[in-house]
Image (cartoon, rainbow, N blue to C red; front, top):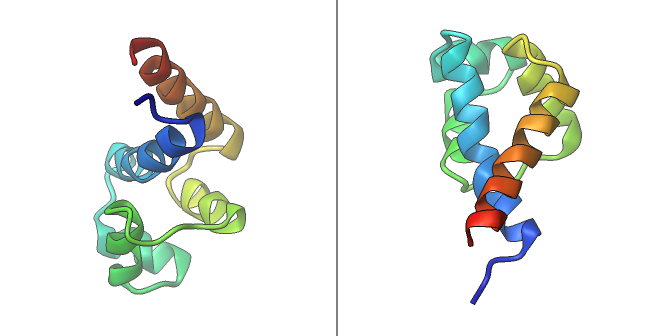
Length: 86
């Protein structure tokens, strides 16, 4: 059975958030401090255990020095690559 686009994006989102954090050279503790949340919050969304709203994604991207539009484009490319290969 082929995964839906929504399912693929839900799987890719936490992975890409972790990637941009690491590319920014930030630990989970450091980004948590920047967004005013506990480290456990970061751990939960990076493991897929917590869904985020768009404002939270925006804050995380900003803390990593990435625009929301750039992040969105990256997420879309990841989903397209998966769907083409599926």
